[in-house]
Length: 336
Image (tube, rainbow, N blue to C red; front, side):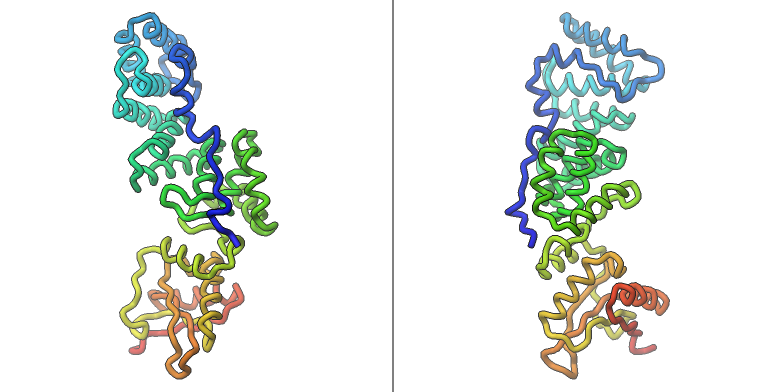
């Protein structure tokens, strides 16, 4: 059984590149020129000229040159302005101005700026839901573009259930494995600790996700949770927390719905419920689910999913459930 308290891993040396960089010598920092994206009308030598002006005691001129280059589409210039304002190199530090320039550079496609922006939001922000969500969204986008640091950080967040996300160990291992393949050091270090706590089937599912990440993308619902826990309550709770906005019907008899698992004990029906919602092939994502007692057989229960819009949708969902090995009955509203 998977227990988050037993597998919590630290983010280690890569927890936040900007935090480490902030301790660097400012002169060394200004010598470092990113190569992610350079504006069409400016060569790297012009970035060097601007940074030289700042190093030699003329920060106003250097910053003005960087600003003009940024306004003409040079993402590196915006990135350096962000770093300068964050560190206070040649001027007073300003976190808010730094964040503005990180955003400008990120919008122009600068990967390092995007990572710095996400890392600041997640690790040094105000710990709000909005900041966590934005940071995770940036990491997800970068991970799909092949950025190993983003894969690693996102994997660790999923593994530990940080930032308001549900623990998602299978997806986390897939991300760590992909980053390790790209020779990202912290991922290589963390991967064995994850590996030993997952079953062969869970690891295989994670590797499949890693190989098909671009196609599969990211989902709020944990991947293959049934492979890392046999706790039905945990699976059901996670399902309820990530389910869409479908509301519980006031009266099931008034809507089309699915009935599964007739005349089962409460323990059996709960296990059935967990196995169904943990399997994406059952096609019940976003449906409301409820265990109800059989009217004619007290002490025995059945499982309801719904509502669905019409008979066609009900039949389609039942077919998916039957293909996954579950009996299913499409129930119409009473008036029909």
